[in-house]
Image (cartoon, rainbow, N blue to C red; front, side):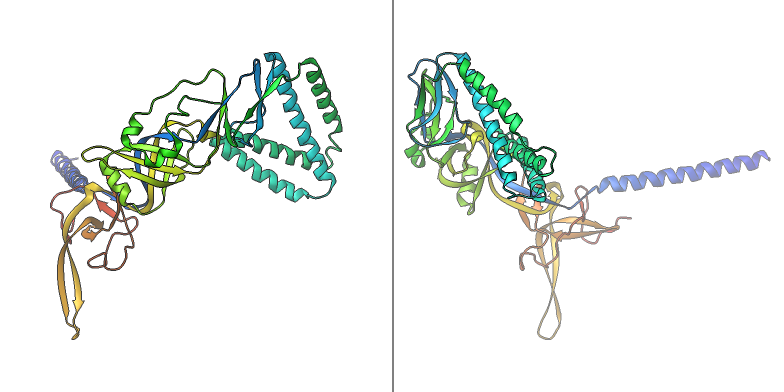
Length: 426
């Protein structure tokens, strides 16, 4: 090949490569200049974070007997006034043996219940199968929430249904052999262990907890609705009596008292709806609450008092916990705050002679990329956080000046200079 021709081909190839490379750089720079984010549907809850102090109507149960306690009810269980919450034994071995005998008696009752239900013909295999599936879902749900009391009940019910299915399908004729073996163990445990020397009785009805933390009498339950921020700050922990056998919460209603900022107090004061409280130490889900008091102090923090009526064993142990107060849920299109600008939009109206009239108004909105064209769209903000806003994709009539706003998956420009409606990005 002629050297001159080779040089010409090489120069042409290098020139084309250079043009392609420069074009790539220009396109890349252009896109880097106008990065976009899709407007996606998002649901958020407006929340206030605070430290909450929980106040309940609590009665500490005293035990003046000498010996070892064996509780005969679970934490969180409902108790009646003047009922026994525990038995007293002279030593720990007797307490353990009798406690084990109680557990075995509960198993006997489950087996007898399963056997009696299937013998009466009151249930069918299809009903049992559905019950097993339903209780298995409940068991997994409560286990995930760490609701140990409910998990135990779920497991007992699940075992009962499984036993009934074995009987109905003929895999087992009866549980007489198992019941006899359990009864023999129970008799051996009872005979080898000493009897109870007494019992601990609760004077009030309510929900029982073995745990006392010293705050049971820190503030009068009857005065919670009149509490001040100074009262909350002055609460001190007391000592737990050495003869304490637990406590009973005798009112299903209880309170969460929080110190919050004045700005949060102002927002909470004007909120006209039901609130929720998330106590993450006790539950993964928020519970309903009623706002009972917001006490604002000039130039300082404020007090919020919330009333709840949801009670189980998880909440009985909670006292001074981080909480989130929820004030409504908002669903809309998420947009970065960096994307928000002020610009003019145009509206066309027609008079009685069908003659068009154009009006302009400066509004808050975002620039959206449609192909290579930039369009400015007004937005209606439902909720604003530090970094983003939630926009209404279908706001009420007359909220928008020209009736036009962003839509789902619009490419919203989050950064760029010299943006204006109608600009073409080539």
